Image (cartoon, rainbow, N blue to C red; front, side, top):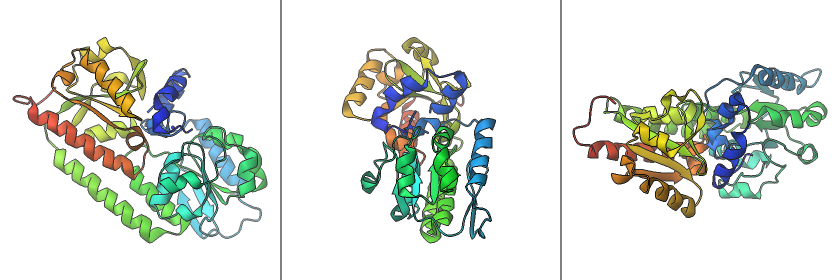
Length: 351
């Protein structure tokens, strides 16, 4: 989540999960694809932002308004519950997370991005944007040099680092932290307002909603399938049932094998996974080598999912970043889960 790109997910995970339990739950899961965890993973947490972070974001937005404040022609609410105001559509925004860059391009606003952070590699043209550091520790001098009119942040720590810029240049601040699949089209619509690209953003948001509704309808009422979502390789981590990944599994008519964990992610042993008897095992990976290592681990374990051919890998960036590509990944995930469902003899009505 530096956001780190998906191919660095596993190493990032190890660093994140050494933090206190509350941060561990918060950072693990939106992204394995973005920065610290990779946003990807963090987005899978459904916990609300800590009170201190909310207070800080509110204070920064308040400080970001000139005095006297010009009439705000644009107002939207961000994911921290703050009202973000702009006198005109943003034209020099800096996205401090890879998922925010993707969503800006999806909303038709790529031309209005002035900079981003390391790991922002999609769409390909995003690689040409000036980088201001990583998503947790952006360089205030580089940010100030770009003179942003809008900062799109994911982690409160980035805002603390940029306090001098917020005080001197007073850009608007939008906190982007999608926690469910429905939050993705909602964010597109909000970005459309912020950047003045409402027609494009609205059309793409509506298209995503139709696809999500179709998934929900297609798999509603089907016999449940027990799924283990793996993050990390050595050691192995399981994703819990909070946030976007949990939402995705429910739409697929699946049950998270570690739904009772009560956390976004937890370290697990091969033996504990075997005890849960998952029908399907899925991992987000960043390279063919990672995919092969994943298959070797579970094929040698004797787990039924491996014996039955239900080991699946998906691109980590697509699976863990809360963007339109996640909807693509969830459609694939649901289809693979349904294939496992259809191959079970006399599928039970419950688990």
